[in-house]
Image 1 (cartoon, rainbow, N blue to C red):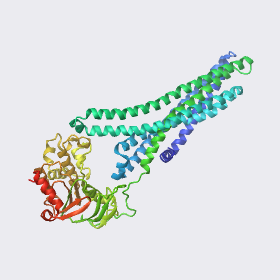
Image 2: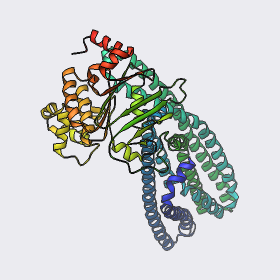
Image 3: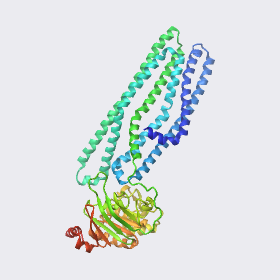
Image 4: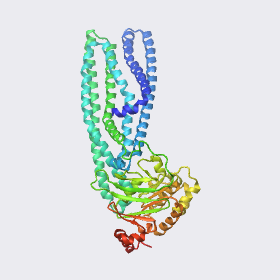
Length: 576
């Protein structure tokens, strides 16, 4: 946690210095009041001096006003520091996550990353606010409070020497046992978020297979685990406050008991006893406030570790040290002996893949499930880095290209089409913010999406729910294709992006795309041979290796794997 605080509180050093000053003044003025109250009792009430009571009362009111003013200013500074700290940590996490490749996202998992950016940051932020608001004043109150109490009566100071260490030991023992419970609580919070996310996204599948009861029991288990852990941590927290109250009240009784004897002996005044008791209460309350913050420290420490795990993780796809920023604008694509292996995997996903595709050419990739088609698209777009060989665009290795230059030249339509919450227009302009309405409609026409968009309430301004859940799978896929077309890149990557389309729509889209992207390099991954049979060249993959490269007619005659795919789909009536 120290590393997180040191890193993200550094810009607020001046605010913290001012906060320390305000808290010092506020704490000091609060410690002056008991002494003034003792003087009122001993020099005013006991002597019947009304004038002294009024004069000291006015001084107390002035001191109280100063204390209130500085307390308000301190809270303002603490809120400013705490909110700024939380904003900066969230921003750092967000930017780091956006730099991650698919590998790092898969390692952490989307639910865990969301929890870390929201709940974990909130835990540390609350700790910072509580520390700035209460804990800074606590040591000042304790140190100067002990000094002021001893000024009132040195004979009772031994009570402070007993009660304060006792309270610190008891509370420290409880807090130390809370740390593992809070760590486990955050892990189980990740788990429940994971289950909830899967159940909400897959609601239709759950209902289709009548798995409501199973999923309910599954949620009940993870919910019960989180509840049990929370209860254990809650019991420890519940134990803290009765313990503190017992020590404080016992100490107060001891002060009154022994102080009463000293008053009876004439060695202590009533005002000094009242002041000593007030100082004891202030000191104990300061320790209580610090302990309240200490109860948040274990959970904040666990959250800080989780935050640091993300911030310390660097992307496996790193930008080049000296990136190439100027290349010929053509869009040629070359793969030379490309190999790719996921970390820790026994077998390579891709091995020895070579391919050349020039502007104006359409290259198709086909193969059975798990043959490496999507992985090939991912290494072209540099979502992953190849483990051997090279991928070149316009003759430059994608690992040497400036990432912005690379991604500006690529229009990717992933296998799972995803739309953002907003409107049709905001989604289409995602890759080209300045696109005109005529450009949007042109892309929609090519993607065979113009008709249903016109029928939607608002047309281009029709609302789109997160993930595109308010449109059908085919409509979502066509909008994702249109989004890539609006950008007009030099290289198009369609990763099985026509799978949700019927054959007639598929044929019309491919015919329109051939005209629209006639000067671009087009790479299409498909399961249906009818989608790619007219491609300039077809790459056939099997177990990550190239087993065929050529036109449809050539592969039917020379590649058994491709011929088998064609035959199986003709048998199923897939070819129209």
